[in-house]
Image 1 (cartoon, rainbow, N blue to C red):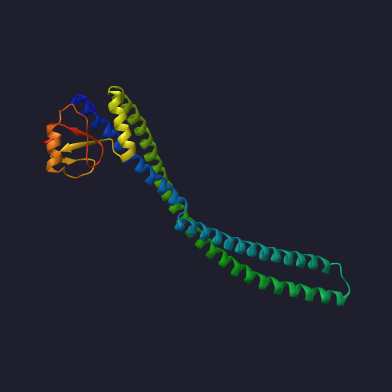
Image 2: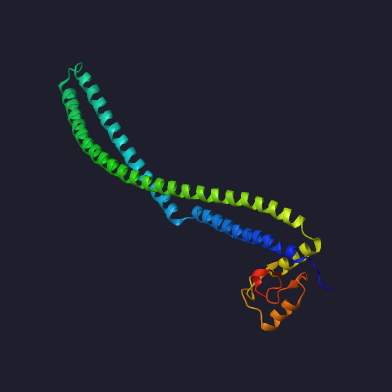
Length: 246
């Protein structure tokens, strides 16, 4: 038995179809956005920048430690010389004085050598600082750009979620005003074939994009406007309006 629903009421399924089509597009966009965010989390370029910055930080720390150690060695030598100078004042034995002077001379030569090492280590530290800062800046700029992009994607997702709620509300209002049997058929066909309604325009059905054959068009023409027809190509409810051109 053919389901009969006033043509104007059937036409309202196009509003439901438009909302359902928009939902599919929104969910696709949300999947793409979430995929883009996941791609950022595993971005090889960013991870390489992070590792490079970490490596340069380690190198810089090593150079800083070297400078600190060499400066400490210089201070130890200076303290030893100062101690020996103080000892000279109280030593009367010439051999002890000569030995002490030799030690002081040796310490002074060591200080000269250590100063050269400090200068060399300081230069290496300063060069490592420049490299590290450049690497860290590149990493941070990349991160800032990525963070901005992720924030924009999250904003898009949030906007999509709000729109989905609005669509759900609007759809519920329309569906509540339609005959239960018509809605049931629409949902059944949509679940089975992906589309619940198809708009016929100039012999072409919107759901499939194909033109009906002359015989099929004749069957549609001969049907009562209130008969609920099924599209032979898409199996969706075939909606006929003035624009159908029949």
